[in-house]
Length: 128
Figure 1 (cartoon, helix red, strand yellow):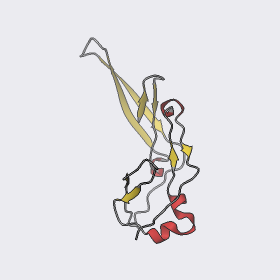
Figure 2 (figure 1 turned 90 degrees about the horizontal axis):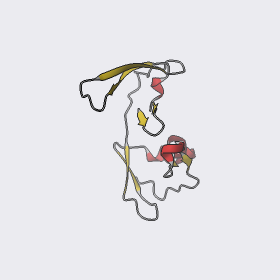
Figure 3 (figure 1 turned 120 degrees about the vertical axis):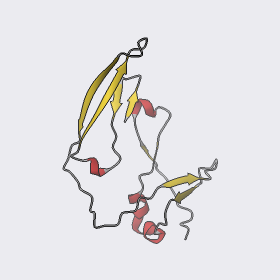
């Protein structure tokens, strides 16, 4: 959840498909600037559109994160995964580009919230 002070808006951006169809409750507490004991709670509800999607518990899911390391001035770097990844599968039939959403954000992102599609991305070495 992000609060943008200039537009006074709250943005809720879930990162999982499993939030579809769910309802979330939270409270925003606003306090007066000069009175440290005066607070006003606002109770909020967010109902996510779509059907409820339950995870398939019979599949052994592995959460994998990655870091971009050693990024140089020519925009070359390394993706380092937290667990072993089947690089043979990832490099065949464009799976890498279907799997990874590669985009860039400009310095005006906080005003336009736009993810710009990266037009050219080359993998130099798939590792082992």
